Amino acid sequence: MRILTTALAIALMAGTTLGAAAPALAQKKAEAPKPVPPKLSKPVLAVVMAVQKLQQAGDHAGALAKLAEAAAVPRAEKDDALILAKLKLFSAQTIKDNAKLEEGLTEAADAPSISPEEKLTFSKFIAGLASNRKDYGKAWTWYEFYLAQKPDDVDMTVQAASVAAALKQPARVHELLTKAIDLREAKGETGDRSWYEFRAQLVIDNKMDDKILPALLSWVKAFPEPKSYNLAIELVKQRQGNLDNNTLIDFGRLLATAGAMTTANNYLEYADAALDRGMPNEAEIVLKEGIAKQLLDGTKQNIKEFVTLAATKNAESKAGIAGLERDAKTSPRLALVVADTFANLKQYPKAVTWYKTLIGNANVDQDTVNLRLAFALKNSGDAAGAKAALANVKGGARAVIAKFFETLFTDPA
Image (cartoon, rainbow, N blue to C red; front, side):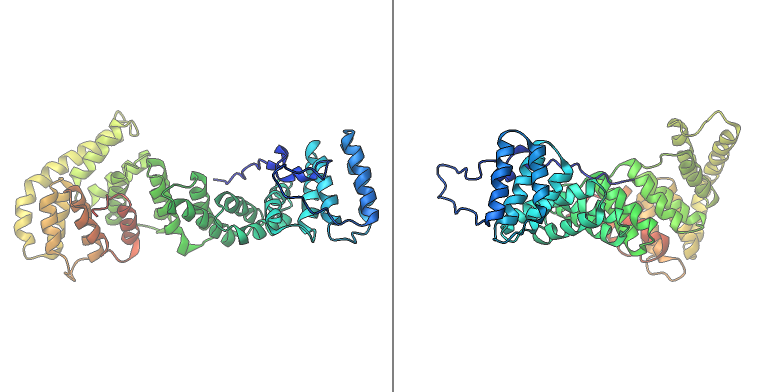
């Protein structure tokens, strides 16, 4: 994942901002007040006249050479530096000499008589040209200058982020990309996909642990697609270390709810965990879906045996549920099994009832209860209740799962 620096469309080429650098320096609009003539020293005025003559003859290479010869001429009056710089700009933009263009822009921006508005305009082009030739130190200086005055310019913020990346300043890249994303989202718009993806990869690569989950959640909220959910969830799974099958079931449910089961391993891992933890109906459904989507090969012997085992266990589970319910009335651990079994059988209202009997019970893990209650409530159509249950999932891998689940629910408000 990479941020591609946006190519700068230099408005200078259109003869707008730099129009004042044209050979006829005294050009004026009819409706404009009479301009104050630039204050030039005699040596500089002589250079100006010679350069203008060459420009009027179309000899811009000669004009640039003449200006180079005049580099040592003292800039004694306040407008000397700016006028010479603008003459350089005019010839450079005419013959599309980017090196001279950047040189002229920099000289103009540093000139004592340049207006703050014009310096700001020039600064963005200096930054872009310096970045294009990989002088990232200079580019950063001018991006920083520009953004100090125009902090809400999203495009320049992203370009500055790409320069910070080149300078190997990950914290600054994260700050700038986050700002650009926030500015877009504040307007009800989505930032470019690459901004979210690059930021997520950046915080992972640089072990910015406190920023990883927010970056991944922001990415899937902006692009709630199977691919983004799958990648983001797998990234957080990998960071959890070795997970037991109980937790893998919850990750499997998350992926399935997000429509993000995109690999054979997603289906096999979920089905294996479900079967191991006494949820064969869930395992059978998952396996058959994987086969239907052609991510699992139903003609292979191992897959056939897996489906047969899940189906057999499923029949046994359905037959034993009544007896299990009786025993569960005096055993919180069995009550959780009953609740999970009804969720596994997609009898979500019954699952909700059993999960609710376990809320606050110290004999069962409350993060597990609340997360699975949320899953059952969501599938029962109670989004508000599901979100309330998720808010009570406090720690470990299930807290991460809960945050992703929240992005999948329609806000009941």
